[in-house]
Length: 287
Image 1 (tube, rainbow, N blue to C red):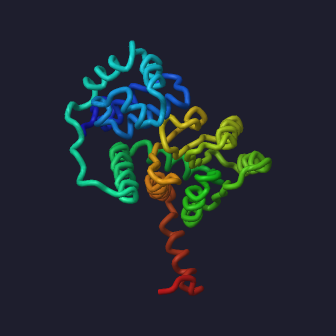
Image 2 (image 1 turned 90 degrees about the vertical axis):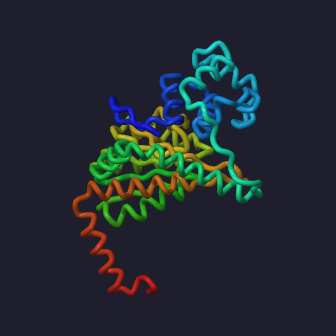
Image 3 (image 1 turned 60 degrees about the vertical axis):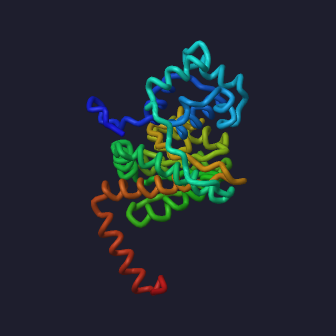
């Protein structure tokens, strides 16, 4: 891992791949291929089109069309390019065979390692912390699979931020609540967006931006459908090895965002101490 001195951005196989995809209008299937490639950046230059298709859960012709969409003659040309921009050594083979439950855990560990690589450049998270801390009130959006992520963030953020408004239920009222937040002085909205991405989330983010809010989004991929409606997107991959997706990395990224939020709220520590004093007086927690 190295750092580009001209930009300060950490240089990793994943960031090189993301740079390759930037500026291209990708279809949902192509975004899925791109996301799979970023997650397995060190391995991708050595995969055949059939293997990549299997990894992404798409057809082999879709991989070929994806390569053409990026400006290459076909997948062999894309793979030759990848071998130039991604380190030549393959990832070390993992330990012995795992059962399906262990494989899910190992996949989440890889997602967390990828998140750690992204956080080597802390500037996007710090920028997000400043944006969110300045918004009074602060609406936090998360529907369906992402509702628990939004709830967890809002629960802790309310201990240090004076006005956090959780938006975890859809329906016709959600735009009304955004309008109310804007009238009250909100300048930003935080969104947690996880697959499968509800159309309502995409529509709500578009509405929020039209209302003048700066949208900060935690999503499973930089190529998620919400990307085009986000001013600042922070990616954290989900695990897909079990019947239902696992979201350890998005949860941890949410906690990192909370830390950045606290850093930009000068009275955050005083609020936490006051909460602890009140909790002790009320006997709120079992010692």
